[in-house]
Length: 327
Figure 1 (cartoon, one colour):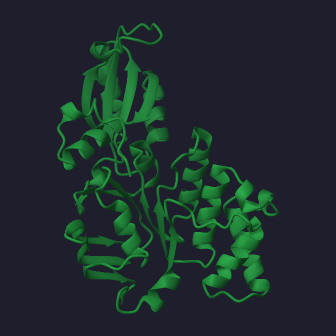
Figure 2 (cartoon, rainbow, N blue to C red):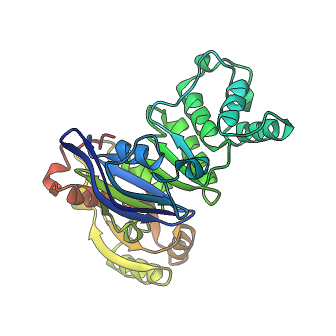
Figure 3 (cartoon, rainbow, N blue to C red):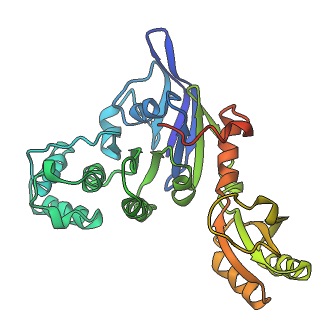
């Protein structure tokens, strides 16, 4: 789908991106992570043909983006960090306008497509409102709607959940997942847990270069908090081994937080397991069948954070000082 070879971008004498080479398969959801100034937005702008590279090649579906942009642009949908919205237009009117900008005719078929996209992105209920009156969450949804109205094969999303509240983040995550399969998606985000919930693979950008995070080994890692004596721990390990691979068993009591609600940590331990598929339901069923008390099941996000810090050239000691990764 996307083949990038020796791509670079200079602003004057400053190198913003490159040399960068990567391959993204059709239908993948790929996350771009990186510290402020790492080159994520510049990379997305080049992939969208909004910005020409200084050197290197970008091929989308085998077509060179620089040499033949008119053939490639109809295949691309782009949501920049600031959605290109016209505040004085009504929502439905704006989507019809953007459809025509993408070469779609002003006919009933395009009108039906606009209605489909409004339903898909859940902006239909505000179809008659002026864009300038929309909340931030609706503006982000409308930004995605304009990016997919022409049915692009490649969807580029720059910080799609930036500024959203927790409810809106969940809704946006579900929306992006619903687009999986119909589009190849490349998104940038500074929120590490969101990447684990949304993306098939992550690429960490450091000083304008991409490092593959080996996401296949991370995305299936789960942390289980269980209660019981040593015999229960053995049963838990045996039960989970029948479902997936057991990575490690540890005692939770030593890691108890100094603040927060009081709790009895006696006989509480952690179990870390890994799998290349979603085994949460089967895992819980196996543990309940083995009469093991499950207190909590979560994705091992700390492992993802440590991985990012390592790839970004920061040691684990920096984790306490890095609260978030800026776009």
